[in-house]
Image (cartoon, rainbow, N blue to C red; front, side):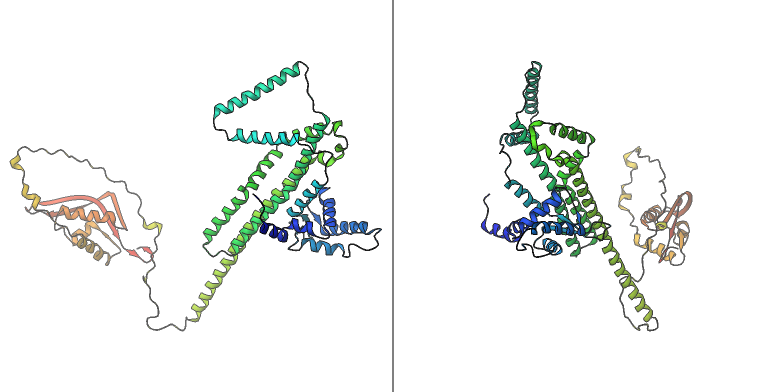
Length: 487
């Protein structure tokens, strides 16, 4: 994709790396920051120590100069390098410290890496990088291949190649890298290792940027708190599950493995014993680069944990102040209520939809009562068709359920509880068994009722033929609801 002119103009004005390269004092900034940070792989330096180092460095540069090329002192230079718009250094306060510290920014790291490329190596190697490209492509293709037959064939081809190499070694045919190949691959390893070490600052900066976005969203949130928390935890997952987060987690799991650490140490020891490297072996820091990786990775881990903890405290503080505001509002209501105690309004001054507060207590709900198992005989024997009286089908009785409900409410207006057996003494059954069954149906739907299968009541009535009928049914007690629950 070609560069756009407007985009490049914007980058030149706003990108810290470009501004650093265009600065008049860029040689001073680049050389000093490379000396104090990268040469010793420091991730943070105290402000007083930073000023002392810069004073010494400026004194060294001014020595022998007729005209002072750097008229300002160390404190002024550091202040300039950290101002918004420059962003060549990051000034911050570590947890538990009230002393400012400094660290490189990702933009400055990019400049230092680019300047590294200006100093050409002993030679430009292409074979090693070509092999790296081929291996990466081969790894991608094999990693996405879904056909198991193709993958099996690829493994067989690699196995045959390994078998041929073993055979050559058994016959004494040992092929070794020459000096050019060793140096080329070593320089490529050094470049990649240093870039990886620099990338940790970019990863941390990305995490801090996501943290700032979350805080701004929390500060300007106007919706429900539940939605805010859901959004917060989603963003927190976004930090850990971003491309940078997942890649860093995979790196951290690998580098923290004891087997990986031992393998890296052994490989580096063997490589630095090669005489073909010559002066390249003097880079002792590269020999322990994996420990620098671990130290930088640990700081990144602490940064992520600290950001998460700060976000939680930030949310807790907001919740505290919101709750405090609610308490203040309640206090104001109480004060106004006390002030109105002696000034009770007259007349209708408020309308309520329901003047009673309905409180549903757990004690209102009856315990489970197992139903009574009854044997149902569905077989009907008909001896003669002439004995069936079809006229009874046209003499069905309508039971007024509302009237029975009113009987119960009328009884409860006089007492807090009423037993169905006693209710039937006051309101005798007019339609016999059908009316009794309707009472039982009302009891099943009634909100406050107690049904006891152990105790039974008896209901009696006289049918149309003048025969006295009786029916036994479980004891049923209806209860009245009050403003405080069951009476």
